[in-house]
Image (cartoon, rainbow, N blue to C red; front, side, top):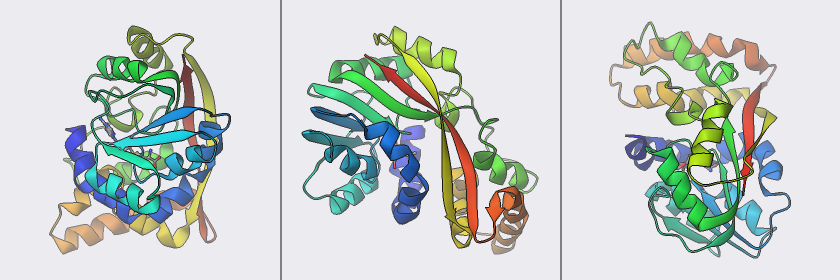
Length: 254
Ligand SMILES: C[S@@+](CC[C@H](N)C(=O)[O-])C[C@H]1O[C@@H](n2cnc3c(N)ncnc32)[C@H](O)[C@@H]1O
């Protein structure tokens, strides 16, 4: 289910908004890549922004992603780097010094099996995941506002999808059962910003409302959803900029 989403509309939207998502998520790059050395596997690398940043520190970096359109965009961005279109849950990787990921490890069907596979792929783990939906009101603003118009919007599952790693005890349990040691979670709060002019393009493409809008042909309903959702972002709009704090975990293990 999650796989299909990234292989299809979800992946395509990220490719189209690559410049914007790069910009919004730039603050996550230093905590992810500072201090890397040796060989690195970037899991769920998407269009390759963090793979490129890691390659400036490490000797060799390979990016892996399940989405063909994302990997194609990554190869276009960095033709000299190695990218692999594969399912990180089950692919047999060679051995790396580091396994890293920015928001690419929350979508596994069987997280224990997937992280056991990644443990075979790397000596050290460093990934950034979202804390809970409640701690990230920007991320759910669109669906809260749109719900009366789109009653079939799927409710957020705290154990699957974007917020699957919000509960620190669950993360510790998954990684420990998968064979990782010295599991450490540190709160990571990152200030994110985008031009206010980009907001509509963002919420109409990315996230549950963006995905739902992609399937709506009724133009009047589409327009009503957009008109209803826009004001929900008012608390985050400051003049010509949208700003929010992303509440995440920096997860590390050996
Ligand atoms: C939120 S995006 C993050 C992309 C990228 N890491 C970034 O920060 O720009 C999540 C990525 O995880 C990828 N993904 C999801 N499940 C995966 C799996 N089982 N194996 C490999 N990649 C996966 C998606 O295709 C998507 O590119």
